[in-house]
Length: 570
Image (spheres, rainbow, N blue to C red):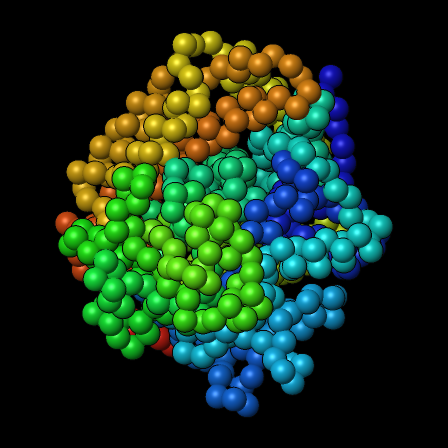
């Protein structure tokens, strides 16, 4: 007999989007029971790693304005953002910055005491609101502290959700408590998926090792579409050799990117913005410099470039980039006060995710998605830095309120339709994975997958490379790797890892199929065999639906309000 736990709203994931959703839902009705399920302890969610800022227009009297933020976001997206969605982000964010401030967020301040903002790539004005270089950690702590003030928010730490239960509407999820290994059903009339991105399908990645696409894949297997998964953001400055992020705030503070000739090479690629061009532009420029022989050779054998912050001075670095200095010393042996640090473009963000509308609603009634797990098309083909934490907070609130209102007056309806789903999921998990057999090491499969994505689906892509990667991923899926050697019930991380790899393989396949189908270069998706943007044929979102033969791809229209596509120049 499977244990069953009932709540009114289930929130899967405990990062910025999940916590903001919980607060919003709990505030709608204190009589509702809100559950937050997370496969890690709440403050271990990867949102704590966000460093640089949260975008908002705060000082219109100094020349900034919301229309500029909207246009910068749309242009940065290479005109694939849904423009009504970009507008909603911008209109909502000033309130959220001040709301966080009222909840105790320790924003960095100007000398006059007002909230400080710094420059970020692709923006016309400084609008990255920051807290030193630890904005995600402080935002998470502020939201978590606020959650604890609500008696109707219940946290389930270290639960791994495995499937969505549904009939014509959302019914709940199945989950495994990692501490005990117990398989459990969570019932609720409303749910929100806030499980973050899929960045660990790459080896060289800024993501925590727990940032695997479990939530995205859970929706995919439940019949919901993944949208725009071919668009993977490569942040220009991943520290060598670990890939840990060097925040864009380092360039916002005035850092220089230099090649082996000592040149600030961005003058050749984006003279108007230099190092603060959008991330896709800077990353392509860096790889071109490397390919043309102007890079440095790291001791690992990989090529890289250097980020020079020495001219900022030790006082400024200690004030606003203390965390980055610590990362440099610990993980690269470099003190950024004294010398330039070696960097290379690194997988950092997925523009794609679960297909959602402007309200965060998915195709399944009663289920929403928010944050990086969702794709409501805020970012199109390329996200501007500092817009992701903004998206998490805005749609956390929106989806939390909507899910709570949906749950009011509704109880979990007849569960008969899901009994077979529960049985099938238990069989898939335990017979298909836990008690599986085979001589192939699942960790070797994971490494081959992520190395393949690094090699074949990186900043520049080709038909041949993507086809080879897709063939390799499908070969890996077919190997006899689905087995768990550790048979313990309690804290079986081997079991968790194998479930994660299962999701990673399916998600990587969607990324590759989408990239092969999009025969153009747009935003972060750059095909050397199709080097130009093709609005006639590809000004559309891609939707991928799960089938046993592989993803079924369809096109979905982009929403335009007032900005016609033009060539991007910076």
